[in-house]
Image (cartoon, rainbow, N blue to C red; front, side):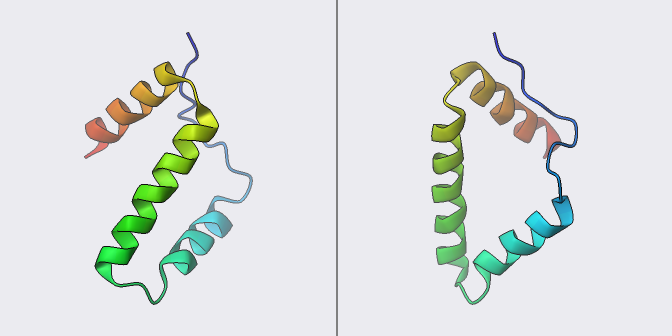
Length: 64
């Protein structure tokens, strides 16, 4: 079973966050939510490991 990486793993987290915010710039709330949903599905497909995806969903639920 693969394990979800929960420690910092992005080389430039601030740069990524800036790009993520920029992707939402000018979008309506509805379009922004749709972008988030598509991004989740694209990244889930990239990960591809259902065990890791289930761990990520639980981590996101626990963080909220």
